[in-house]
View 1 (cartoon, rainbow, N blue to C red):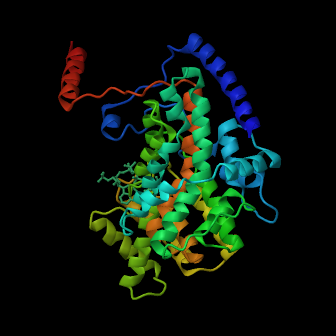
View 2 (cartoon, rainbow, N blue to C red; view 1 turned 90 degrees about the vertical axis):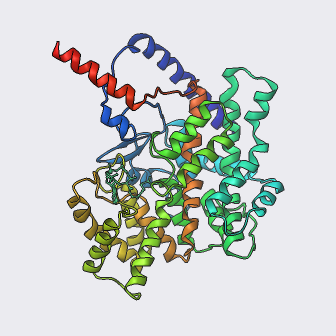
Length: 441
Ligand code: HAX
């Protein structure tokens, strides 16, 4: 508990000294150039952010502090009898940069249990929303209502030194992570289970307790949650949810406001909402064919129809990745280990065999391979969670780990308010004319 904070203090002070020295010596070194096309295509490939927690390689996929997903499944502490890592361990790794011991992880579990009380008004505010409001709307509303608890906002209001910012952001981060599963589970039980809520079980770890509060007692569902919450946590800094949390935090909006903003970005269908879209798309495919398992030919036809209607094939493509997402592969392995046979998971596998050449043949899709969202829903359906419009909330609970660990680092490194330049198309046109005139001289 205090040891984690002290350990972070040490790491942050080391890195601050290194950055200061590096900037003094190499601050003027050029990193690269970018093109006009990159500006019009969402700044892809333009390096403009510092994110310490993870790095995405287009071919290899994500590495959390240098560790790949298969390495983490091996190295991070687990509960006895489980093959899946505890998300508490991933959080420690993201924050501190080292693989934690079992004791480090146990301390985090206990600390989060201690901090997990959600004030009643948060549930009251959620209850004011119509029950048919999207689960992400209810979840984010709950987080916004919980902003009354922000230690950072209170401390800033009292007046604190810049040097102390990270300490309060750390406290908010730990409180938020402790509390978001409770809010998320409340939304689930309110919307789908007649408001029959389940009290937390303090004998369980963070992921298993979340599964319990959702109403799932199967040991393998608990394992799935541990894996799910670990692999969805972080994907370097430029994705919409991470970048938004960082950007809003750069104005010194507190972690509650920053996380809520990031989660609103996660709720977009090109980002985290793709996980619900995948299952919706598969259910519609099955329905169109009158139920049962489709053939590969039928799946190919359905993909072509989706493209012809000007829609995206959900779960495929990525802004950075250019190969199968290792988060997809980890879920495939989970299926093979724990489930072995399930119709929807088999359809996911068939889509994986059929979709990439069709997507590639369009000639414009840069990455025809599946991303994390292509598989996650099928596993949830297997364990009885059919309510696919809830899936992005699960993603959001996990994403809180990564974006909040980064927010603590942002304040510890004293990163300033973010303010990239922008230009008009008129400006670009004039710039091109000037460059061409220069060249023709
Ligand atoms: N189906 C159909 N068309 C696709 C496509 C897909 N799966 N992926 C990309 N394209 C299209 C784009 O819409 C774009 O078309 P236009 O030129 O007509 O605008 C073209 O191919 C080039 O896009 P790109 O450069 O390959 O991809 P982007 O970096 O612009 O977008 C996306 C990346 C992930 C948004 C995109 O691949 C997509 O829409 N995929 C489907 C939705 C999805 O699965 N999103 C989840 C991504 C992972 C994630 O963030 N999870 O949270």
